[in-house]
Image: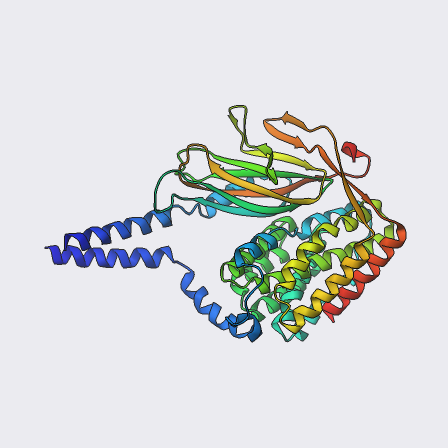
Length: 307
Length: 151
C-alpha cells in the first residue's frame, strides 16, 4: 500500500515539476544554441562583467518604447515617409548576431512609426524583416508571425497588431535578461532608441517642430544609461565601437542643459480615475546649432547601424 | 518512509502553489481591455510570493523611463485568487508620487502627467503582506504641446 502510494506521489511530483516548467524545456535548449552565436568573449566566464545582471536588468528596463516618439510625429502634421525607415530587404544582409540584434531594434521602431500612420500596406514587409532577424538570433519563438501577418493583411486595427508585437518584444526582452543575455537585449534597446531618434531627427528637419526638438534634447538623460549598458560589454570590439559612437553623441549633447523647477503638485479624481500632475518640471535649453549637431551625429550613427 | 512521503507531498504542493500563482493570459487580456483608448506601451506580470521563511511578502519593483509632456495611465488587474487587492505605487526615488490606494479607496488605475523625463519606479505590494498575482499595463493617454498644462 505504502509502496503504491509512494509511486503515485513520485509520478505526481514529477508531473508537477514538469508542468510548472511548461515551455522551459524548449527555451533552455534554445539557450545553448543562442550562446554559440554570441562572441566568445561575452559568454566566457573569464570575462567578468562590470555590472551584475541584476543591475543591468534594471538599467535596460529604463529605456523607453517606440510608441511615444512615433505618436509625436503624427501630431507634428508631417507626411509619412517610407524613405526614412530602414529598407526591410536589408534584413537578409545582416550576417552577425550583433548586427541582427541592433537592427531588430531598428525595425521595431519602424513598426511603431508605421503603426502611427496606419500604413497596413507595408507592415507585412517589416514583420518579415523582424522574423528574419529574430530567428537569426534564435528568439523567433516569441512572435506569432502567422497571427501578426493575418492581422496585418486583414481589417484589424493596427493598434492591436502593435500591441501584440510590442508585447512579444517585451516577452523576448524578459527572456533574454532571465537567461543572462542582456548583451543581446542591450543591442535591441539601442537599435530601437537610435532609430526613434533618427526618425525624429528627420521629422524635425522637415517641420522644425519645437515639441520634437524638445523631445530629442531631453533624450540626453538616456545617453548615460545606454553608455553604462553598452560599456559593460566593451571587451568585445563591436560593442567598444558602438560605445565610442554613443560617447560622440554624448559629447554633442553636452551643450543641452536640463534643469528642474518645482511647481504645484495636483491630484484630481475624474470619472473614478486618479490623475496626478507632477510638481517637478524639466526646463530644457539648447540652441539651434546644438540641435543641428545632434541631428547630424544621430544620422551618422544610425546609417552605420543599418549599412 | 513516512518522511520521504511527507517530503514528496510537500514538494508537490509547493510546485502546485507556484504554478497556480501565475495570473495567465485571461487576466492580462482584461488589463489590456481596461487600458481603454490609450496607446499600449508595456505590460508587467507581477507575482508576489512568500519566501521560504514565510511571514509577510515584500514588494516587486520595476524601473521605467517616463517622458515629460506625456500623460500616462497605469492600470492593474488582480489575479482571481488574490485575497487582497494589489497596491500599485509610482515613486521618484524615495518619494511616492501616486498610489492606486488613496484615502482608503482602491482604484483600478491611476494617471500621471509627467513633467520631468527620468527613471521612476513602479512598485507593487499587498497591504496585508499576502500573496498573489496581477497584470499591469502602462499606456499613453495624451501628449501635451508647449503651453499646455504649464509646459
